[in-house]
Image (cartoon, rainbow, N blue to C red):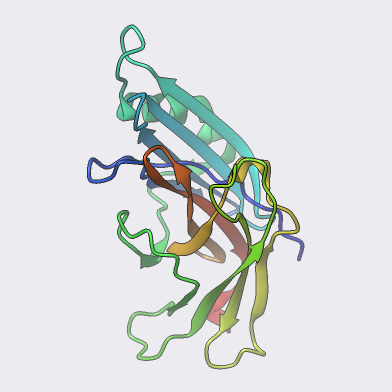
Length: 234
């Protein structure tokens, strides 16, 4: 299965940080779980402008097929609202075209706090809460990369994300993503960690926390990697 990279997108700012910290919002899956839509928004540190991006992803192809964004600069280019930007971006995305159902939120298997910017490279999880042992692991391997956007602020990284069976690695060994080059949209990516894992039917969505140089400190935003896999049958 050939899976294409998903564009990394930015999220929510917290006053506890001096750089942009992003907020991820799952909007929903389509009824047939072919598509997933999510939003990211931020009140930018420095400008204070509200910025939001809504994305629709083809789960099986791991491919971004729709992107809508909005920037709210407030009155006379002063301030702005994250909530206003988010509402406008959702309206622009025309989610009905993809059959997105906002009540179809899937099942959250891993959910780390928004303030957890850890670069966790090995994450175990299970799909049934009553099971005592973990069933699967998500392993991140960071690979050296080149980026003109780093300006000597750090060593950029690509990533390889692999889903494995915890009990029998031969059963599942799916490379969900393996970068061959660093996408320009990812900027100067310095590190990665698993932030969330969500599934709906056979749709599996892994949200990756990405760190990069930012205004007065590191920025932390996210990227989504998806796959279609029948975990219940493994």
